[in-house]
Figure 1: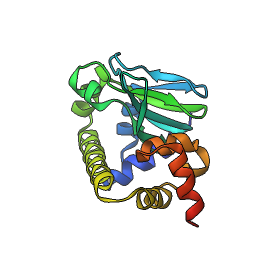
Figure 2: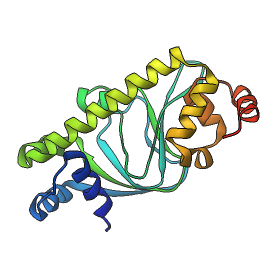
Figure 3: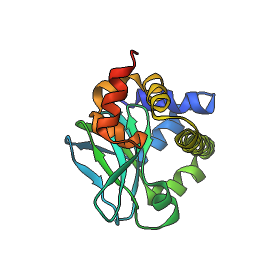
Length: 194
């Protein structure tokens, strides 16, 4: 198993090297999952039992309203973590569904092991705090942009921040993420040259 990318990512976030013992102990808590393309890994209404680190592949998170309209709230690709955090930390049912866009390999930390990890390895408490802070900052920035930027600006920002996703994610999902209809995104893409 190749945990090197995960170890580098963690060390980058905390700003220091992990001892072999610390990382080996953390690794012992992880489970490896291989998901097929278009596989649902967490369904709305079920509790989130895992937080997933994506080694390879692509997952998205979406909310579905009573009319079966989907609203994308997150894409996660290699090097990112994903879960329904309100369910994972709050002991509630999930309000979102997690589904793969591509075949995906994940390392997952189970909810029941989370507290054990941060108690046993203090560096991981700092790591997960930083991870959650960054998630909150990103959410706040995204929320602000939805209300302050027009659709074209939001699309340009998306392309700049996630150039790889533009070719890996179907356009109708990007449109949903940006809060527009696919036809509107198609017009915007024709009008701009990135």
